[in-house]
Length: 163
Image 1 (cartoon, helix red, strand yellow):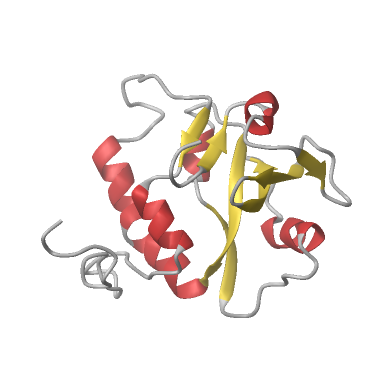
Image 2: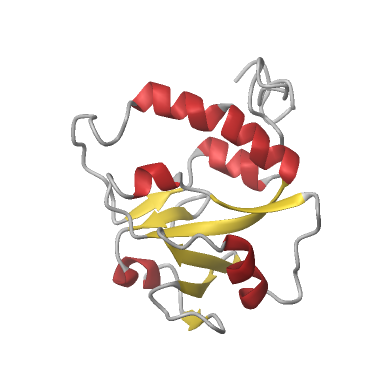
């Protein structure tokens, strides 16, 4: 286990190495499962599933998101297919933090690493670790960066200027 957990899994077998799993009512295990990770239960879904909110409400009926929260993937879906990840982790994230990430670092990340469909192949692990800025998103910090209408991570106090 790495410090922040995982955001994508290549196979169901890889996913089960995080922790024991249980089914989500109304979904086949290949579509959605709850994984009892060391830091608490997590919802993992097939990369093709589009009903994030419905899957979340079936998995966690006592944690229904409010109107200011999104259910979103930590690992960009646009990367899951070309990098061959079949399962992605969902999280309940404040709308501001989620939209900030989409407008800021997720787009910048694609610019840095290139289009995964055309980028040179590089070795990828069976379980993709949560990146730093995915962790920031999990902390509900709207840190998309200047020019997006949101504070950058440094300005939001996620790390100090000396780092």
